[in-house]
Length: 181
Length: 181
Image: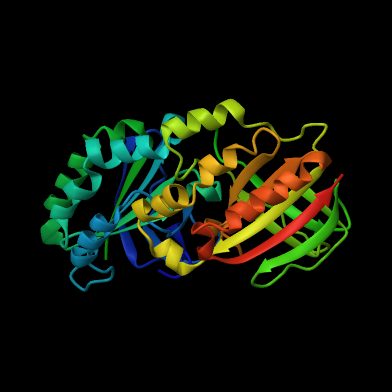
């Protein structure tokens, strides 16, 4: 892993991805607009409906064993068949961030099985996590998913599974931006 | 803990703190200048020798038990007697960031005793950690220390202890900015 890479999701009239829907899951929604561009770097623009910035980074909870298991099945982004994508910005509550590392890990994996339960959706669903909290952004994380149209129902299963976990009780804002190209 | 707070350390001709020395510890140094200002927010300026930005955040390795123990002895910043300060920007190697969470924790505390060995220097030395890596800054962390002149030798002991740890083998750049007010 090299230095963190910075990305801006800019939603407006330009971009590779056509916005199918903006779904409010928890808390305030985001405005609907026609297209979404994934831009390198942290850029600002006056001509977009909204822009969210994030930075890739090291994995915060994954153990060596999990990292090895994930590495063997984790697909890359940009596969030709992946004509569907989802951007899911999430903000967790102060109660989450006040927890100690061992407490967060226990909820994340021991109770919620975030890693192990997600693995059965690999390699169908490609995923990349961007961190936003340190940037002073309105969300803590931006998760980007890519999958083939035939795997859309598996993707919805993955979301339902995650949203039923103990971890998700700490999610105070969540929006689902459904995209196609 | 509220939302992360953002800070800029701006070194030039203005600021509360007089720069006593800029010491190169590992890797490239920073230019020497006369004074240092601690500014709220992430600001840019053309009139400073250098500016480093950071964001406070949740603790990455601390367990609940350690967090409780630290909370009971950790002093606040800004004590009247704390006329000495040190800003120590640090960058860790790619090898560190490629480690999994359990491996980093094992090096951080189990092997290097970063938390437990630092605790004997509390409450003499007040400390605050700022994260910079996600901001695309040249350093990963900025650590700010405050202490009374009489405790300066204890502070040097703390630095020597940390620099001798296994964790510090992953430090590829470190600068020590010594300050007084």
